[in-house]
Length: 352
Image (tube, rainbow, N blue to C red):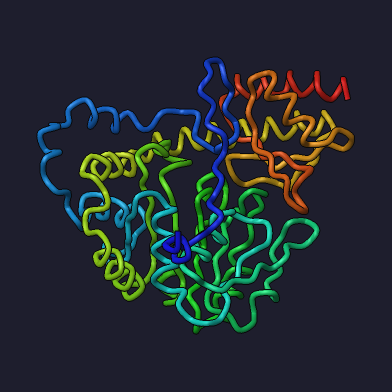
């Protein structure tokens, strides 16, 4: 079977478990516990499905225009893709083409090294400090590009814009990508910096704060030149990446600012409540600015808690990896879901 000698082999990304049983508390994939904007349902209820026979608008104009208005940029500064994973993958393919290594943290979104391997991009990881924070000096060196999430995943740590700007300034010859999948849960976005730095690309998603993980909508904001380069690559692969229904639903979600503020506010409030309850139970965690908490108990191993929770049909995320194998990433659900979690943790911790 000599053909296998030419297969591109990579270790794929491993997503969180997707349990099929009923009665599950699914706190392992950072999905939003609330439905999308009612405006999205209105689109779904009234959409003319006969339009599905037509190719979609390749420029996703209705969605791009809504995003441009919401973030106060020009439409030519917006790139949209099928989820932020698609957007970041396209950015890797477009911008990371030198022989120098791309840099990202050692504890971070575990898709980055997968993309690098798929596209044969050299990379180096930079160790977060003992508090899971980025050291800016680690990124002031020769490199072929930089990417990291802010807030970080899976830690939830938010880095200041001053620190990020220091990294961007020090790397004028590299594209710096800030992955803001969780920015709407308390952090300050880097989008206002895109007009100041032509090498900055900011990526966001509809999967978390806008409750639309199943519709696969992501976008990037940058200067016009960056966006044009990305579109050139995209249109060389597939011009029709986003279906028309997602485009319209995405635009309606963006336009419903009141609902967006309400649901993200509820998640933030529940997150702060959960932090206090976890502290009372002997857990420690970095201060999260996301829709999850990265928690470790002072006496009960994370893997034990993980397995005990599964027995109670409560799913959280656990990685058996260096530095984080005694931590659990706990998605913030509804207040009722978090109370159920806390009750279960009380039993598990008491049992030891």
